[in-house]
Length: 222
Image (cartoon, rainbow, N blue to C red; front, top):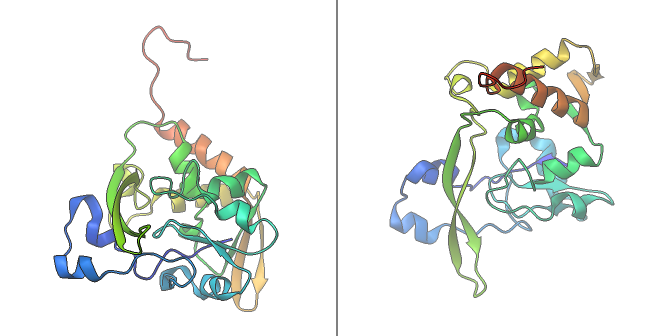
């Protein structure tokens, strides 16, 4: 399974109440997982996977995942707006099914599965965003649907500072320091292989220890 997203995602254009030009909005295509392009920033491998005849792709335009193999359908469906990378998402099913995360030459800020850890960690002050996505309507027309979700560009204010590491990179570096992963070369690419359940559990624990609520006076602190 790979993170494909969509090369026409209007996430930035509609983020937190931003309004698109009406002509542009009217002409924007509805997301079609069968034909939609992939976001180049997430790599050529995901584009290759999406082009495979047997590939299955999830229905969330901006957080679209593509999968191949016997579990592809189980992984990608359902994928609703408002459940981009957290509970109910393909990432949750990937973790529960015992998946492994491979960084094929990608940096440590690209461990997408840690966005699931951000979403489920019990910490206060998590940032949320609103956006709209063009979805296919029953009569063939494009329907713009609004959603809110966790801010994957900075789950807390301290991780949304331009030029500074986000939570994903910070957690990934802390995890690598434990040595609980495999590393090797594929061609000229330095690669990391993580157990998804283990790195997510590490990430949730790390976030809750660093940013969890302080017990009120009189509560059990053991």
